[in-house]
Image (cartoon, rainbow, N blue to C red; front, side):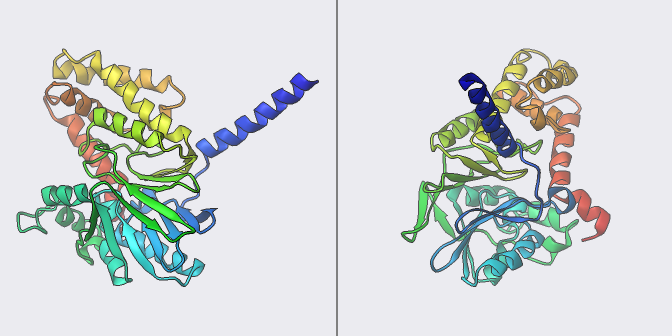
Length: 340
């Protein structure tokens, strides 16, 4: 009888675990996940929006991720419906448009954009139009997104090298940096009391891994460092919220991807390109990481192959597909179809 009760209890816990690790998406819903702490899953397919979070401190609100301008405009009323405290800080987890192009909207609402110093370094590399050079990513996005065209790029002005801490005695949020992952400036927002970690795109929950601005080997190390925090709730940059298992799954995807590509490290680029379907089939056999396998796998394989000393695929097809997939996932197709 005791054995039966133990089995039932184990099954109950397992159901709770898996439901939290792979929860059903609640897109565009502000969800309270702890006292004064909120998570908002952005409408990625419809509007290209990233996920957001916010923490209500005694005197102000700290928002995680600037989003696109339309994404910022989407959640500001939701924050104001919860609290009348001013929004003072908007933390960009990295430099990509769906996480930082909404900065001007936050500034207009009284907030200061915050980020790791690597975000500015990346913006100087890719936002060449802002820094006096040829048109860069902002200008490219503005061609297809009216919300970007109607706003202006606002790089973060409050920067940190290692960490930056917000602490009012009741709530504590630590902005951290563990190294290269999705980009060279990835930041994390860690709530040690609640054991909640906002990861930006260093960890996602689904086929949303864009690798062109990062390094998969370093990404694995960065996730290992993040895991040491002991977070129990993971709020990813895209996809549903999850448990600590989410960090493990994200890391495992890159470990297994690198193992697969390593088997072809000495092959010719065209041979690696031809092996993409075989690599895909192998990755899909692992139920814990299958959800990370998507239409951009060929580009991901190529990126890892190049990191391991190989040359890009001869016809550049995989790389082009990966860049288009990323733009598509972050709103370009939506913008073209709707004219917004």
